[in-house]
Image (tube, rainbow, N blue to C red; front, side, top):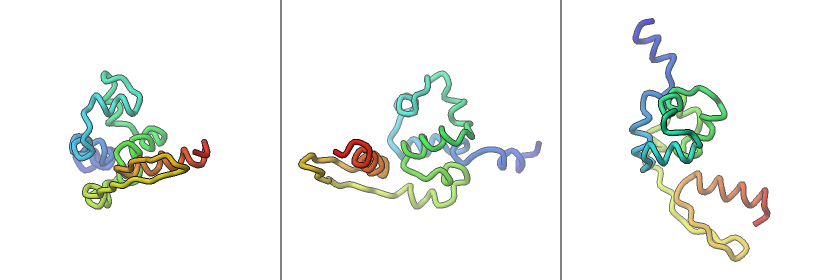
Length: 113
């Protein structure tokens, strides 16, 4: 397999995980904890093509799954900053990124907070 074929067989995430974790201010250990894998399995995690795992990774890193796969539009998400506070039924929620928004949305709809 030549170099071009190898690139087609890898995801953007696999080739750029270090930069993506740095941009999300995550250490490898913290990233593993959030994904729910043992640090000893991190190299498998970076090579994953499993849709469920990539979906979880996308939420942690705050980028869509398709960006993890092909890298298109990554520069848009790289500089995206969301900071805010929302009050729902008297409870305040700090929103620092898209993942916080997704989590709030999920909690509102599933737990009627």
